[in-house]
Image 1 (cartoon, rainbow, N blue to C red):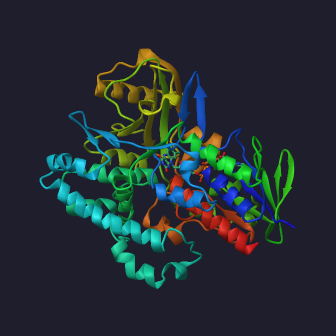
Image 2 (cartoon, helix red, strand yellow):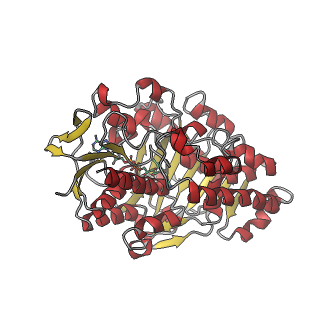
Image 3 (cartoon, rainbow, N blue to C red):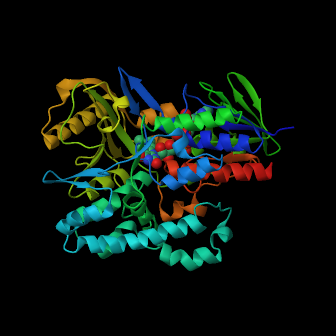
Length: 489
Ligand SMILES: Cc1cc2nc3c(=O)[nH]c(=O)nc-3n(C[C@H](O)[C@H](O)[C@H](O)COP(=O)(O)OP(=O)(O)OC[C@H]3O[C@@H](n4cnc5c(N)ncnc54)[C@H](O)[C@@H]3O)c2cc1C
Protein backbone atom coordinates (compact mmCIF):
# COMPACT_ATOMS: atom_id res chain seq x y z
CA UNK A 1 0.00 0.00 0.00
CA UNK A 2 1.26 3.50 -0.79
CA UNK A 3 2.28 5.37 2.33
CA UNK A 4 -0.06 8.24 3.19
CA UNK A 5 1.71 11.52 3.79
CA UNK A 6 -0.09 14.67 4.84
CA UNK A 7 1.68 17.96 4.19
CA UNK A 8 0.44 20.90 6.26
CA UNK A 9 0.87 24.13 4.29
CA UNK A 10 1.20 24.93 0.59
CA UNK A 11 3.98 27.48 0.85
CA UNK A 12 6.89 26.96 -1.53
CA UNK A 13 8.29 24.49 1.02
CA UNK A 14 5.12 22.41 1.23
CA UNK A 15 4.54 22.43 -2.54
CA UNK A 16 8.11 21.39 -3.29
CA UNK A 17 8.14 18.64 -0.66
CA UNK A 18 4.76 17.26 -1.71
CA UNK A 19 5.75 16.90 -5.37
CA UNK A 20 8.94 15.05 -4.42
CA UNK A 21 7.18 12.73 -1.98
CA UNK A 22 4.61 11.82 -4.61
CA UNK A 23 7.40 11.12 -7.08
CA UNK A 24 8.93 8.80 -4.49
CA UNK A 25 5.67 6.83 -4.43
CA UNK A 26 3.82 8.31 -1.47
CA UNK A 27 0.13 9.09 -1.47
CA UNK A 28 0.25 12.83 -0.70
CA UNK A 29 -2.41 15.28 0.48
CA UNK A 30 -1.59 18.94 1.07
CA UNK A 31 -3.76 20.91 3.51
CA UNK A 32 -3.56 24.68 3.13
CA UNK A 33 -5.43 27.21 5.26
CA UNK A 34 -5.56 29.85 2.51
CA UNK A 35 -7.56 29.60 -0.70
CA UNK A 36 -4.50 29.62 -2.92
CA UNK A 37 -0.97 28.16 -2.91
CA UNK A 38 2.30 29.98 -2.27
CA UNK A 39 2.15 31.05 1.38
CA UNK A 40 4.43 34.06 1.77
CA UNK A 41 4.93 33.92 -2.00
CA UNK A 42 1.21 34.30 -2.75
CA UNK A 43 -0.10 36.70 -5.32
CA UNK A 44 -2.66 39.49 -4.94
CA UNK A 45 -4.53 40.88 -7.94
CA UNK A 46 -6.62 44.03 -8.06
CA UNK A 47 -7.86 46.12 -11.00
CA UNK A 48 -5.32 44.74 -13.43
CA UNK A 49 -2.36 44.98 -11.04
CA UNK A 50 -0.62 41.74 -10.12
CA UNK A 51 1.41 41.90 -6.90
CA UNK A 52 3.79 39.18 -5.78
CA UNK A 53 3.09 39.52 -2.07
CA UNK A 54 6.48 38.30 -0.85
CA UNK A 55 9.64 37.29 -2.73
CA UNK A 56 10.73 39.24 -5.78
CA UNK A 57 14.41 38.29 -6.26
CA UNK A 58 14.97 34.98 -8.07
CA UNK A 59 18.51 34.15 -6.97
CA UNK A 60 20.82 31.13 -7.05
CA UNK A 61 19.34 29.70 -10.24
CA UNK A 62 21.28 26.46 -9.85
CA UNK A 63 19.12 25.54 -6.83
CA UNK A 64 16.05 25.77 -9.07
CA UNK A 65 17.87 23.85 -11.83
CA UNK A 66 18.68 21.09 -9.38
CA UNK A 67 15.16 20.90 -7.96
CA UNK A 68 13.41 20.72 -11.35
CA UNK A 69 16.18 18.38 -12.50
CA UNK A 70 14.98 15.85 -9.93
CA UNK A 71 11.90 15.52 -12.17
CA UNK A 72 13.93 15.39 -15.36
CA UNK A 73 12.93 18.97 -16.17
CA UNK A 74 14.49 22.38 -16.30
CA UNK A 75 13.09 25.67 -14.95
CA UNK A 76 13.12 26.96 -18.52
CA UNK A 77 10.46 24.33 -19.40
CA UNK A 78 8.02 26.15 -17.13
CA UNK A 79 9.42 29.62 -16.42
CA UNK A 80 10.37 32.44 -18.70
CA UNK A 81 13.43 33.78 -16.92
CA UNK A 82 15.16 37.05 -17.69
CA UNK A 83 18.46 38.24 -16.22
CA UNK A 84 18.09 41.80 -14.97
CA UNK A 85 20.55 44.51 -15.94
CA UNK A 86 20.98 46.68 -13.96
CA UNK A 87 20.62 44.26 -11.10
CA UNK A 88 19.46 47.05 -8.81
CA UNK A 89 19.56 50.82 -8.29
CA UNK A 90 20.90 52.27 -5.05
CA UNK A 91 19.76 55.58 -3.60
CA UNK A 92 22.59 56.29 -1.21
CA UNK A 93 21.10 58.74 1.24
CA UNK A 94 19.62 61.63 -0.69
CA UNK A 95 22.88 62.60 -2.39
CA UNK A 96 23.83 59.83 -4.74
CA UNK A 97 22.15 57.35 -7.08
CA UNK A 98 23.92 54.51 -8.89
CA UNK A 99 23.18 51.28 -10.68
CA UNK A 100 24.85 47.96 -9.98
CA UNK A 101 25.17 46.29 -13.34
CA UNK A 102 24.89 42.63 -14.22
CA UNK A 103 28.41 42.19 -15.60
CA UNK A 104 30.79 42.56 -12.68
CA UNK A 105 33.35 44.26 -14.91
CA UNK A 106 30.78 46.97 -15.70
CA UNK A 107 30.81 47.96 -12.00
CA UNK A 108 34.54 48.59 -11.77
CA UNK A 109 34.18 52.33 -12.43
CA UNK A 110 31.47 52.63 -9.78
CA UNK A 111 33.39 50.66 -7.16
CA UNK A 112 36.54 52.70 -7.83
CA UNK A 113 34.55 55.92 -7.56
CA UNK A 114 33.16 54.88 -4.16
CA UNK A 115 36.56 53.86 -2.81
CA UNK A 116 40.11 54.08 -4.18
CA UNK A 117 40.87 50.66 -5.63
CA UNK A 118 37.30 49.63 -4.80
CA UNK A 119 37.01 47.22 -7.74
CA UNK A 120 40.13 45.26 -6.77
CA UNK A 121 39.08 45.19 -3.11
CA UNK A 122 35.58 44.01 -4.02
CA UNK A 123 37.12 41.32 -6.18
CA UNK A 124 39.18 40.10 -3.21
CA UNK A 125 36.05 40.04 -1.06
CA UNK A 126 34.21 38.12 -3.77
CA UNK A 127 37.01 35.58 -4.17
CA UNK A 128 36.46 34.54 -0.58
CA UNK A 129 32.66 34.67 -0.99
CA UNK A 130 32.95 32.35 -4.01
CA UNK A 131 35.01 29.91 -2.01
CA UNK A 132 32.45 30.03 0.79
CA UNK A 133 29.66 29.41 -1.70
CA UNK A 134 31.48 26.53 -3.31
CA UNK A 135 32.35 24.85 -0.02
CA UNK A 136 28.85 25.23 1.31
CA UNK A 137 27.22 23.76 -1.79
CA UNK A 138 29.64 20.84 -1.78
CA UNK A 139 29.70 20.00 1.93
CA UNK A 140 27.12 21.86 3.86
CA UNK A 141 23.83 22.86 2.25
CA UNK A 142 22.53 19.61 0.78
CA UNK A 143 22.72 17.56 3.97
CA UNK A 144 20.82 17.41 7.21
CA UNK A 145 22.22 17.39 10.72
CA UNK A 146 20.71 15.39 13.53
CA UNK A 147 23.19 16.34 16.19
CA UNK A 148 26.41 18.16 16.84
CA UNK A 149 28.47 15.09 15.97
CA UNK A 150 27.08 15.14 12.41
CA UNK A 151 27.93 18.75 12.08
CA UNK A 152 31.43 18.57 13.44
CA UNK A 153 32.66 16.14 10.83
CA UNK A 154 36.15 16.44 9.43
CA UNK A 155 35.27 18.46 6.37
CA UNK A 156 33.31 21.04 8.30
CA UNK A 157 36.00 21.37 10.98
CA UNK A 158 38.71 21.57 8.35
CA UNK A 159 36.82 24.18 6.37
CA UNK A 160 35.10 25.93 9.27
CA UNK A 161 37.55 28.79 9.56
CA UNK A 162 37.81 29.26 5.83
CA UNK A 163 34.03 29.12 5.60
CA UNK A 164 33.89 32.11 7.97
CA UNK A 165 31.89 30.73 10.88
CA UNK A 166 33.91 33.04 13.08
CA UNK A 167 33.28 36.76 12.63
CA UNK A 168 30.49 38.60 10.86
CA UNK A 169 29.69 39.56 7.29
CA UNK A 170 30.32 43.18 8.24
CA UNK A 171 33.67 42.17 9.73
CA UNK A 172 34.60 40.36 6.53
CA UNK A 173 33.54 43.29 4.32
CA UNK A 174 35.16 45.99 6.44
CA UNK A 175 38.46 44.11 6.43
CA UNK A 176 38.74 44.87 2.72
CA UNK A 177 36.56 47.92 2.25
CA UNK A 178 36.33 51.15 4.21
CA UNK A 179 33.67 53.01 2.29
CA UNK A 180 30.28 52.51 3.91
CA UNK A 181 28.40 52.84 0.62
CA UNK A 182 30.37 49.99 -0.92
CA UNK A 183 29.98 47.94 2.25
CA UNK A 184 26.22 48.43 1.98
CA UNK A 185 26.22 47.03 -1.56
CA UNK A 186 27.91 43.89 -0.23
CA UNK A 187 25.95 43.59 2.99
CA UNK A 188 22.32 44.47 2.26
CA UNK A 189 21.47 40.90 1.26
CA UNK A 190 21.71 39.90 4.93
CA UNK A 191 18.19 41.26 5.26
CA UNK A 192 17.13 38.61 2.71
CA UNK A 193 18.08 35.96 5.25
CA UNK A 194 16.52 37.82 8.14
CA UNK A 195 19.66 39.23 9.69
CA UNK A 196 21.86 42.26 10.26
CA UNK A 197 25.35 42.38 8.72
CA UNK A 198 27.02 42.74 12.11
CA UNK A 199 25.17 39.73 13.54
CA UNK A 200 25.34 37.33 10.61
CA UNK A 201 28.33 34.94 10.39
CA UNK A 202 30.93 35.83 7.76
CA UNK A 203 30.09 32.62 5.94
CA UNK A 204 26.96 34.30 4.53
CA UNK A 205 29.11 36.68 2.51
CA UNK A 206 28.43 33.98 -0.08
CA UNK A 207 25.23 35.93 -0.75
CA UNK A 208 27.32 38.57 -2.53
CA UNK A 209 28.66 35.95 -4.88
CA UNK A 210 25.13 34.66 -5.46
CA UNK A 211 23.96 38.14 -6.48
CA UNK A 212 26.98 39.67 -8.21
CA UNK A 213 28.30 36.51 -9.93
CA UNK A 214 25.18 34.45 -10.61
CA UNK A 215 22.89 37.35 -11.45
CA UNK A 216 19.48 38.62 -10.44
CA UNK A 217 16.72 36.85 -12.33
CA UNK A 218 13.03 37.43 -12.82
CA UNK A 219 10.40 35.00 -14.10
CA UNK A 220 8.08 36.84 -16.49
CA UNK A 221 4.57 36.78 -15.06
CA UNK A 222 6.05 37.15 -11.58
CA UNK A 223 7.26 34.90 -8.79
CA UNK A 224 3.78 33.52 -8.77
CA UNK A 225 4.77 31.54 -11.88
CA UNK A 226 7.23 29.62 -9.67
CA UNK A 227 4.39 28.81 -7.28
CA UNK A 228 2.21 27.74 -10.19
CA UNK A 229 4.99 25.56 -11.60
CA UNK A 230 5.46 23.75 -8.29
CA UNK A 231 1.73 23.32 -7.84
CA UNK A 232 1.38 21.87 -11.34
CA UNK A 233 4.39 19.63 -10.80
CA UNK A 234 2.62 18.23 -7.74
CA UNK A 235 -0.61 17.73 -9.68
CA UNK A 236 1.30 15.87 -12.38
CA UNK A 237 2.69 13.54 -9.69
CA UNK A 238 -0.78 12.88 -8.26
CA UNK A 239 -0.68 15.17 -5.20
CA UNK A 240 -4.13 16.16 -3.86
CA UNK A 241 -4.60 19.69 -2.53
CA UNK A 242 -7.18 20.91 -0.06
CA UNK A 243 -7.23 24.73 -0.09
CA UNK A 244 -9.14 26.74 2.51
CA UNK A 245 -8.60 23.80 4.83
CA UNK A 246 -6.52 24.64 7.92
CA UNK A 247 -5.10 21.78 9.94
CA UNK A 248 -6.64 22.05 13.40
CA UNK A 249 -4.80 19.24 15.17
CA UNK A 250 -2.22 16.55 14.57
CA UNK A 251 -3.55 13.57 16.53
CA UNK A 252 -0.89 11.29 17.94
CA UNK A 253 -0.89 7.83 19.48
CA UNK A 254 2.11 6.42 21.31
CA UNK A 255 4.43 9.11 20.01
CA UNK A 256 3.33 8.87 16.38
CA UNK A 257 1.07 11.10 14.28
CA UNK A 258 -1.93 9.10 13.11
CA UNK A 259 -4.13 11.73 11.50
CA UNK A 260 -4.53 15.43 10.85
CA UNK A 261 -7.86 16.89 11.90
CA UNK A 262 -9.58 19.57 9.84
CA UNK A 263 -13.08 21.01 9.44
CA UNK A 264 -13.40 18.70 6.40
CA UNK A 265 -12.67 15.64 8.48
CA UNK A 266 -9.62 13.62 9.49
CA UNK A 267 -6.77 12.84 7.10
CA UNK A 268 -5.04 9.61 8.14
CA UNK A 269 -1.27 9.69 7.90
CA UNK A 270 1.74 7.39 8.04
CA UNK A 271 3.82 10.54 8.17
CA UNK A 272 3.08 14.26 8.51
CA UNK A 273 5.27 17.00 7.09
CA UNK A 274 4.60 20.46 8.44
CA UNK A 275 5.44 23.42 6.26
CA UNK A 276 3.53 25.76 8.57
CA UNK A 277 5.58 27.92 10.93
CA UNK A 278 7.37 25.69 13.44
CA UNK A 279 6.04 27.49 16.52
CA UNK A 280 2.46 27.30 15.22
CA UNK A 281 2.80 23.59 14.45
CA UNK A 282 4.16 22.78 17.86
CA UNK A 283 1.91 25.00 19.95
CA UNK A 284 -1.38 25.03 18.04
CA UNK A 285 -1.44 21.59 16.40
CA UNK A 286 0.21 19.39 19.05
CA UNK A 287 -0.41 18.73 22.74
CA UNK A 288 2.30 19.84 25.11
CA UNK A 289 3.70 16.32 25.32
CA UNK A 290 4.33 16.31 21.58
CA UNK A 291 6.45 19.47 21.50
CA UNK A 292 10.20 19.38 20.94
CA UNK A 293 10.70 22.99 22.00
CA UNK A 294 9.17 24.94 24.87
CA UNK A 295 8.18 28.63 25.01
CA UNK A 296 11.52 29.51 26.58
CA UNK A 297 13.29 28.14 23.51
CA UNK A 298 11.20 30.36 21.24
CA UNK A 299 11.59 33.43 23.43
CA UNK A 300 15.36 33.03 23.16
CA UNK A 301 15.46 32.75 19.35
CA UNK A 302 16.63 35.67 17.26
CA UNK A 303 13.67 36.30 14.99
CA UNK A 304 14.08 37.77 11.57
CA UNK A 305 12.36 41.09 10.96
CA UNK A 306 8.72 41.52 10.24
CA UNK A 307 8.00 43.99 7.45
CA UNK A 308 5.78 46.88 6.56
CA UNK A 309 4.82 46.18 2.97
CA UNK A 310 2.91 48.61 0.81
CA UNK A 311 1.41 47.43 -2.49
CA UNK A 312 0.68 50.40 -4.72
CA UNK A 313 -0.89 50.55 -8.17
CA UNK A 314 -0.33 53.89 -9.93
CA UNK A 315 -2.25 55.20 -12.92
CA UNK A 316 0.94 56.52 -14.50
CA UNK A 317 4.61 55.60 -14.93
CA UNK A 318 7.38 56.75 -12.57
CA UNK A 319 10.70 58.02 -13.86
CA UNK A 320 13.92 57.29 -12.05
CA UNK A 321 13.26 53.70 -11.02
CA UNK A 322 14.46 50.34 -12.28
CA UNK A 323 13.03 46.93 -11.37
CA UNK A 324 14.81 46.65 -7.96
CA UNK A 325 15.52 49.84 -6.03
CA UNK A 326 17.14 50.21 -2.63
CA UNK A 327 17.24 53.29 -0.47
CA UNK A 328 20.05 53.11 2.12
CA UNK A 329 20.23 55.52 5.03
CA UNK A 330 23.80 56.70 5.54
CA UNK A 331 23.79 55.34 9.08
CA UNK A 332 21.65 52.25 8.63
CA UNK A 333 22.78 50.88 12.03
CA UNK A 334 20.05 52.92 13.76
CA UNK A 335 17.40 51.13 11.70
CA UNK A 336 18.90 47.71 12.49
CA UNK A 337 18.84 48.66 16.19
CA UNK A 338 15.10 49.24 16.08
CA UNK A 339 14.66 45.81 14.50
CA UNK A 340 17.01 43.70 16.61
CA UNK A 341 17.88 45.58 19.82
CA UNK A 342 15.27 48.20 20.72
CA UNK A 343 12.05 47.22 18.94
CA UNK A 344 10.12 50.26 17.68
CA UNK A 345 8.76 51.67 14.45
CA UNK A 346 11.99 53.16 13.03
CA UNK A 347 12.55 56.93 13.01
CA UNK A 348 15.02 56.74 10.15
CA UNK A 349 14.78 53.79 7.82
CA UNK A 350 16.18 52.15 4.71
CA UNK A 351 13.77 50.45 2.33
CA UNK A 352 13.29 48.47 -0.85
CA UNK A 353 11.04 49.37 -3.77
CA UNK A 354 10.26 46.78 -6.37
CA UNK A 355 8.81 48.01 -9.64
CA UNK A 356 8.21 44.84 -11.69
CA UNK A 357 6.21 46.75 -14.30
CA UNK A 358 9.56 48.11 -15.54
CA UNK A 359 10.24 44.56 -16.82
CA UNK A 360 6.91 42.84 -17.03
CA UNK A 361 3.75 44.28 -18.63
CA UNK A 362 1.69 41.51 -16.96
CA UNK A 363 2.05 43.22 -13.58
CA UNK A 364 0.19 46.48 -14.36
CA UNK A 365 -2.28 47.84 -16.95
CA UNK A 366 -0.67 49.62 -19.90
CA UNK A 367 0.91 52.95 -18.98
CA UNK A 368 0.61 52.24 -15.25
CA UNK A 369 3.10 51.21 -12.58
CA UNK A 370 3.26 48.45 -9.99
CA UNK A 371 5.14 49.41 -6.83
CA UNK A 372 6.00 47.28 -3.81
CA UNK A 373 7.59 49.00 -0.81
CA UNK A 374 9.20 46.95 1.94
CA UNK A 375 10.62 48.28 5.20
CA UNK A 376 12.03 45.72 7.66
CA UNK A 377 10.60 46.34 11.14
CA UNK A 378 10.83 44.49 14.44
CA UNK A 379 8.54 41.49 14.92
CA UNK A 380 5.89 41.86 17.59
CA UNK A 381 5.39 45.64 17.25
CA UNK A 382 2.03 47.17 18.05
CA UNK A 383 0.41 47.07 14.61
CA UNK A 384 -2.76 49.16 14.98
CA UNK A 385 -4.45 50.77 11.96
CA UNK A 386 -3.17 54.09 13.16
CA UNK A 387 0.45 52.98 13.67
CA UNK A 388 0.78 51.20 10.33
CA UNK A 389 -1.00 53.92 8.34
CA UNK A 390 1.15 56.62 9.92
CA UNK A 391 4.29 54.66 9.02
CA UNK A 392 3.10 53.86 5.49
CA UNK A 393 2.45 57.61 5.02
CA UNK A 394 6.01 58.38 6.08
CA UNK A 395 7.39 55.86 3.60
CA UNK A 396 5.43 57.42 0.74
CA UNK A 397 6.44 60.95 1.79
CA UNK A 398 10.07 59.91 1.87
CA UNK A 399 9.85 58.25 -1.53
CA UNK A 400 8.26 61.37 -3.05
CA UNK A 401 11.01 63.58 -1.68
CA UNK A 402 13.69 61.13 -2.77
CA UNK A 403 12.53 60.80 -6.35
CA UNK A 404 10.93 64.22 -6.74
CA UNK A 405 7.83 62.40 -8.03
CA UNK A 406 4.48 63.22 -6.44
CA UNK A 407 2.69 59.88 -6.69
CA UNK A 408 0.01 60.06 -3.99
CA UNK A 409 -2.70 61.60 -6.23
CA UNK A 410 -2.08 58.83 -8.80
CA UNK A 411 -2.62 55.87 -6.49
CA UNK A 412 -5.47 53.69 -7.72
CA UNK A 413 -4.74 50.56 -5.67
CA UNK A 414 -3.20 50.55 -2.21
CA UNK A 415 -2.82 47.89 0.47
CA UNK A 416 -0.72 47.76 3.61
CA UNK A 417 0.49 44.38 4.88
CA UNK A 418 2.36 44.09 8.15
CA UNK A 419 2.99 42.06 11.32
CA UNK A 420 -0.62 41.28 12.16
CA UNK A 421 -1.30 40.11 8.57
CA UNK A 422 1.66 37.73 8.70
CA UNK A 423 0.05 36.26 11.81
CA UNK A 424 -3.53 36.06 10.52
CA UNK A 425 -2.63 34.94 6.99
CA UNK A 426 0.19 32.47 7.70
CA UNK A 427 0.14 31.79 11.47
CA UNK A 428 3.63 33.20 11.84
CA UNK A 429 5.32 33.58 15.21
CA UNK A 430 5.19 37.25 16.31
CA UNK A 431 4.55 38.31 12.73
CA UNK A 432 8.09 37.52 11.57
CA UNK A 433 8.38 37.80 7.79
CA UNK A 434 11.32 35.42 7.31
CA UNK A 435 11.21 33.13 10.37
CA UNK A 436 14.45 32.59 12.23
CA UNK A 437 17.39 34.86 11.60
CA UNK A 438 20.64 33.24 10.40
CA UNK A 439 22.85 33.85 13.41
CA UNK A 440 25.68 31.40 14.08
CA UNK A 441 23.60 29.54 16.64
CA UNK A 442 20.63 29.38 14.28
CA UNK A 443 22.59 27.88 11.40
CA UNK A 444 22.78 24.22 10.26
CA UNK A 445 22.57 21.87 13.26
CA UNK A 446 21.35 24.76 15.41
CA UNK A 447 18.20 25.32 13.35
CA UNK A 448 15.03 23.56 14.56
CA UNK A 449 15.08 19.83 13.93
CA UNK A 450 13.95 18.28 10.66
CA UNK A 451 12.13 15.54 12.60
CA UNK A 452 10.27 16.06 15.85
CA UNK A 453 11.96 14.56 18.89
CA UNK A 454 8.59 13.58 20.41
CA UNK A 455 6.46 12.60 17.43
CA UNK A 456 8.51 10.09 15.48
CA UNK A 457 6.84 10.51 12.11
CA UNK A 458 6.40 14.30 12.15
CA UNK A 459 8.82 16.19 9.91
CA UNK A 460 9.35 19.84 9.03
CA UNK A 461 9.92 21.43 5.63
CA UNK A 462 10.25 25.07 4.58
CA UNK A 463 12.36 27.88 5.94
CA UNK A 464 12.61 26.91 9.63
CA UNK A 465 14.85 23.83 9.44
CA UNK A 466 18.25 23.78 7.71
CA UNK A 467 19.29 25.38 5.38
CA UNK A 468 16.82 28.20 6.11
CA UNK A 469 15.32 31.29 4.55
CA UNK A 470 14.77 32.15 0.89
CA UNK A 471 13.28 30.36 -2.09
CA UNK A 472 16.44 28.42 -3.07
CA UNK A 473 16.97 27.31 0.55
CA UNK A 474 13.37 26.20 0.82
CA UNK A 475 13.80 24.01 -2.29
CA UNK A 476 16.87 22.42 -0.70
CA UNK A 477 14.92 21.96 2.53
CA UNK A 478 12.18 20.18 0.54
CA UNK A 479 14.69 17.80 -1.01
CA UNK A 480 16.14 16.97 2.41
CA UNK A 481 12.69 16.54 3.99
CA UNK A 482 11.38 14.29 1.20
CA UNK A 483 14.50 12.10 1.27
CA UNK A 484 14.27 11.70 5.02
CA UNK A 485 10.56 10.88 5.03
CA UNK A 486 10.86 8.40 2.17
CA UNK A 487 13.86 6.71 3.78
CA UNK A 488 12.23 6.41 7.19
CA UNK A 489 8.81 5.34 5.91
C1 LIG B 1 8.12 39.99 2.11
C2 LIG B 1 9.05 38.86 1.76
C3 LIG B 1 10.00 39.02 0.77
C4 LIG B 1 10.85 37.97 0.45
N1 LIG B 1 11.74 38.14 -0.58
C5 LIG B 1 12.45 37.08 -1.02
C6 LIG B 1 13.16 37.15 -2.24
O1 LIG B 1 13.15 38.19 -2.90
N2 LIG B 1 13.82 36.04 -2.67
C7 LIG B 1 13.80 34.87 -1.97
O2 LIG B 1 14.42 33.89 -2.41
N3 LIG B 1 13.10 34.76 -0.81
C8 LIG B 1 12.42 35.83 -0.33
N4 LIG B 1 11.65 35.72 0.80
C9 LIG B 1 11.71 34.49 1.58
C10 LIG B 1 10.84 33.39 0.97
O3 LIG B 1 9.68 33.95 0.46
C11 LIG B 1 10.49 32.39 2.07
O4 LIG B 1 11.68 31.88 2.64
C12 LIG B 1 9.66 31.22 1.55
O5 LIG B 1 8.62 31.65 0.71
C13 LIG B 1 9.10 30.47 2.75
O6 LIG B 1 8.36 29.39 2.31
P1 LIG B 1 7.77 28.33 3.34
O7 LIG B 1 7.09 27.32 2.54
O8 LIG B 1 8.82 27.89 4.28
O9 LIG B 1 6.75 29.15 4.28
P2 LIG B 1 5.34 29.83 3.98
O10 LIG B 1 5.36 30.53 2.69
O11 LIG B 1 5.00 30.64 5.18
O12 LIG B 1 4.33 28.61 3.88
C14 LIG B 1 3.68 28.07 4.99
C15 LIG B 1 2.26 27.75 4.59
O13 LIG B 1 1.60 27.08 5.67
C16 LIG B 1 0.27 27.55 5.73
N5 LIG B 1 -0.29 27.25 7.06
C17 LIG B 1 0.01 27.82 8.25
N6 LIG B 1 -0.70 27.25 9.23
C18 LIG B 1 -1.47 26.29 8.66
C19 LIG B 1 -2.41 25.35 9.16
N7 LIG B 1 -2.73 25.25 10.46
N8 LIG B 1 -3.02 24.51 8.28
C20 LIG B 1 -2.74 24.57 6.95
N9 LIG B 1 -1.86 25.46 6.42
C21 LIG B 1 -1.22 26.29 7.28
C22 LIG B 1 0.40 29.02 5.44
O14 LIG B 1 -0.84 29.59 5.05
C23 LIG B 1 1.43 29.00 4.30
O15 LIG B 1 0.79 28.85 3.05
C24 LIG B 1 10.78 36.75 1.15
C25 LIG B 1 9.83 36.59 2.16
C26 LIG B 1 8.97 37.63 2.46
C27 LIG B 1 7.93 37.43 3.53
